[in-house]
Image (cartoon, rainbow, N blue to C red):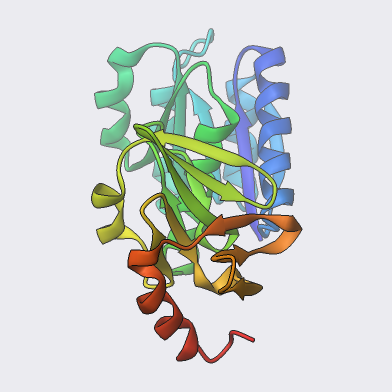
Length: 237
C-alpha cells in the first residue's frame, strides 16, 4: 500500500485535495491511503522522517518559515525514493520544482481530472503495468480503454462513449487511429468500435450492440472487414 502525505497551508484546499484523492483511490481500487495531512511544514517533516511515506503532495508556496521547495529538499535527505508532487498557483516555480526529482507538478486550482491523471500514472510507474489509458484531449483526460464502447465522429469532434459517461475532443479518426489498440476497429465512416465490448451484431439492420442499450452503425464500406474480424475473434459470441 502506498502512503500519501499532503501539505497545504490553506486548510480548505487541504481538505478538498484530500477528498479528491480519496475518491480517486476508491474509484480505481488503488492500493493507497492518506497516511497524514497537515497545514504545518514541521509536522509534515516530523511525520515523513518517522513513518513510511511513498507519495508527498506538497504546496510550494507555504506561508511558513520554510518553503515547499526547502521542505522537499529536507525530505530528500532521508527519503530518496518518495514520489514528490508539487502544487502551486505560481507557475514560475515549475522549473525549480522539477530539480528535486519531482514526479509531477499540479498548477492550482487543481481539478479532479488533472489529479486523477497524475495518480494513475504514478501507480502505473510503481507497478510497471502497461498503459491501458487513452489520452483523449490536450487537458490530459485519460479514459480506461476497456470502458470505451465506441467512438463517434460528430463534425469536428470525437465523442468517446463509455457506459457511464461521454468525453469530447476536437480531433479526427486519422489522428487517433494509429494510437488506438488493435481491438478498436473502424465500422462506419462515423464510428470506431471496441470489439472487446460488442455484445451482438445485427447484420440486417447494420447495428452493433453494446452494454446498457448503447448502439452504433455499420457502414457498407466497412461491413465485410468488420464481420471478418468478428468471425475470427474467439471471445465474440
